[in-house]
Image 1 (cartoon, rainbow, N blue to C red):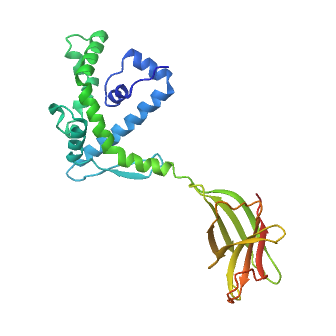
Image 2 (cartoon, one colour; image 1 turned 60 degrees about the horizontal axis):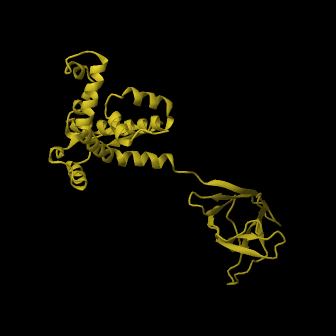
Length: 277
């Protein structure tokens, strides 16, 4: 399927009347329909920012992300358009900032006056006038769209970041049980972080110890182990080495370590449990 060009979608988003062919394609093509919706949201945000910037009592405007939370929009300085004009090497007639033009400048193709200017009220004459206007004003509107995108890019980028910010995913967990004469309770969870790293989060009901608490990962038979670090307070976060195989070290252990300078496990475990992988 031949999709609509971005230039055509930009013109439609800015208010151009769709041709019969374009309208039929948009009805049958989910991709182009979704792209047009995205373009229209950017245009709406930029126009809202421009309207608010002209208000004597307010220089910013708000829009929502669909959850009711309001984000502030602000029109860019005219220097932004000057940079666009220079980088794209546009004609001199396009030098005025399009965002400073009245909204009717870019939406007049939808107004009844466009039909009247053709000298005929017939649909055929109206469509012919629109097509002529599109050929004549296409470069200007495409350039204006560039400014619109720049105006709203910061805001929509922030919204996109909010929508795409994933939460850590728990990939293993265990309830920790007390050993020997201890009565603490606890829990250990292995989270996969958005960047692909793994983090062990350990919590306990108490932080009491004769010395200091150290967190370990043990082999099931406790013949080998890996120290992750000390635990201050009742919660600890430990990033796991990338090459650590949890299936070989699935047992989470919190030990009471004396201040004797010996890095080996003291043999005095407070809490322990095997991860459910």
